[in-house]
Length: 82
View (cartoon, rainbow, N blue to C red):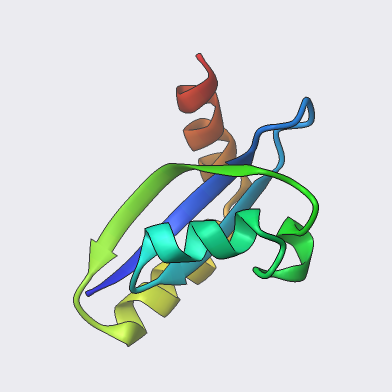
């Protein structure tokens, strides 16, 4: 199983990051320890969205859609914040 996930930074800016992984908790630990994606280094993160997929091709397709769809990202972010 694969997951698309969205993180929110725990600082005052509330940046978001979208990625995919087989193990979200392990990946979150990497992001929070500064060993994840370059954009996530130096911040603490929390998972605010995740969705499960059976195939790698499905997860990659949906990760791309979520990364490019700013309106959807803002909607998920606002749902978490309020």
